[in-house]
Length: 444
Ligand SMILES: [Fe+2]
Image 1: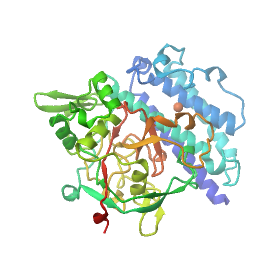
Image 2: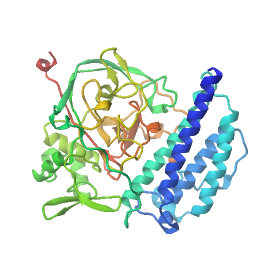
Image 3: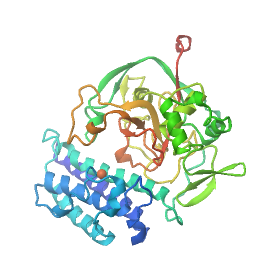
Image 4: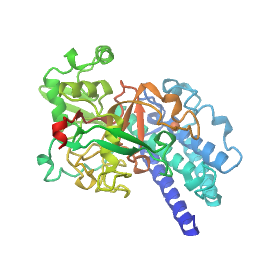
């Protein structure tokens, strides 16, 4: 790496850290001390836990590990270790109050930026530092907590405190788009071995051969989902797996989370405001079992994770897998609904400049998309930099989600990025699209 590249990389890292911090503060400065210390849902931490946890991870990885410096607050390590304390137990811990937590974050950041200035980031240096990996990992970590904190805001009762402009209206061609696009049979490169900030579970690149399939052009909309509800989809056992059926009964599922029926109009609560459900937006806050049941009702299925990634990355003209559906260029406001710019999905068919070569839209941004796949390691997987990042989650308990949502920052979103959660979870910004096998006659 020459001097120019390294200056450029340091500038990009500092900007990514700054963006995440601005968002963290925006999501926490808007609530008073009680609001930050309260647990708004047993599924979530009090926001003040996330706040100091962000600082503690930054201290562990950037100040102590990358910088080789003395610990700032070793007494905090056990309090903010996510593996030692389940979320439901965190309010009872002797946590830092909001003001000391903010002071701790400032102190850690000051040292982290000094470390950044004094550390070599050569591509052939130690893997943790090469091309700034550990700095990228920490920027992504903070952004992932910013997304979690946004989900806590959505669960919080009380008056609205967050505001953002609505996404642009659907483009003129949205209504005329074909409902599904064809992805022809053939191999593609899944995962990456070269993306410098890709996490361990996205690696290594490997070839996957898939038969041809059809994929929905856009995520499933609220209007389509309401047809499933109106047709008795929740009550019809034909559409549910045995585990899904059990969960539907136990949890009393009858509509997406945050929906309620007012007469015959569906309303939803969104960040403290109640409004009619917009028919043309992708459905959000459904669990995997609901997505799977809808797909069966529609005579279709969820796409596998490989099908999702092939549709999002393969450029048939070159045979190469790209970073995003539109190419390798970083996402802009013209490509995708990311970065908490809007606090809701954009209408289905939006972002024509973000289309994949197949014509599929909104694969990146708007809503996380459930896939039919369990979270599993790629062939040749190596845990890095620690086993708890991914490896302990591999197995049939977790389903993979792809593509990021409006609450996800571009730094933590790319065609290879993998998210995972339990199939019952729906406080996350989760939607889906459906697929079906292509018949030989359709493959031309
Ligand atoms: Fe964390």
